Length: 174
Image (tube, rainbow, N blue to C red):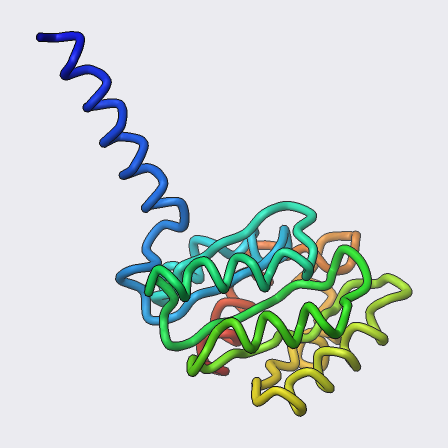
């Protein structure tokens, strides 16, 4: 009989682990999807009632599928913050799909402060996407660009001061 119980326990453990893949999504008021920039501020964002889903080097192309999966499972809060595009060019179609997959939720697109050749293009694409598809812009670039102490030497990953400023800014902007 023990052999039958063990697989059942393993199955239940696996289901629980999968349902908790994004900690706090079910109980959070806001959902934040991002890359390593946002990852640095995870603790501060969670303290401000965000469910935080980050991955190092995440591309904007990942956003539509992640948002669709959570929306279909009714695990996506009413407010969705997307801060992606630091790791390469944003395809406008991916932005459109991400916003549309959120359904009737309020989507916020965060502008980039990354010192790379694609920053300007991506920020323009984010603004265009927001305007065309009913999302809102959180202008992190304009808010943060003159605060060098908020960033490590790479110019975009957040110091501890930057993490607090970022979390507060996103919270107040949503």
